[in-house]
Image (cartoon, rainbow, N blue to C red):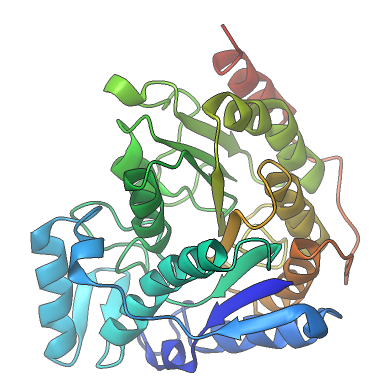
Length: 335
């Protein structure tokens, strides 16, 4: 069974005319659920609103107060790409609350679910401790990861969005309790995520970056999981895995240049899901800006999370990037 945490109120957030992070993204993702072939295995849950106390585990008081004040004023611009309307604050609180809701339900009903899938917006992985940016208001995955870490769990976050999750990296860069691993395109916004960014202080070695060149295909990304990320997650002793599942690595995405298909994205999610026990994985929608790609990817991922196969497209191979995987594997090899 798959716990699906979603809420139509997330549709109300609008960032402006012709903005790529538009309400239709959520509609496409939920349509994919209906096309997954596993609707009988889906159990829907409404998320609760994240609290300020939960946000303050990963964000500064200034950031939280600023987002709240802009939202309560009816909207405004948080950075050049990140805009709020009157519905954005509630949507962002629901998006962040969805991941906490998913974790709480998986714990409360231990053994009842294979995994959870949070179909929400706005995305979160670019939000740093002190700055909302890159379409992201609050860092939803980080909020849940911090709560789990504070409860004594060992957490791994695996980010497969085409854009580097700079906010998540910044939040946990020196935190040894949370392993952050990202497979992303480089060069690309926000310009972070070099292979030599590996964590600092007590968190040294707990950040992994695999910056792939434009045109990289699914086989390259899967090699990054098999050769670099999976061994690191095992060494970390992760008891939970949170997946930042951006669908903008799809070859149809209008603002990126990777070469994945929905089959590749589902394969990546499946490989990561296998790294921890049943009922200990939460997958969260991040980016992705081609509506058909979102729909197909959401369908394929939902099926994958319950151990079924739904592949609207074929997997890809033959693209560049294995040299980057080799470099990352060398940096993160066991001592």
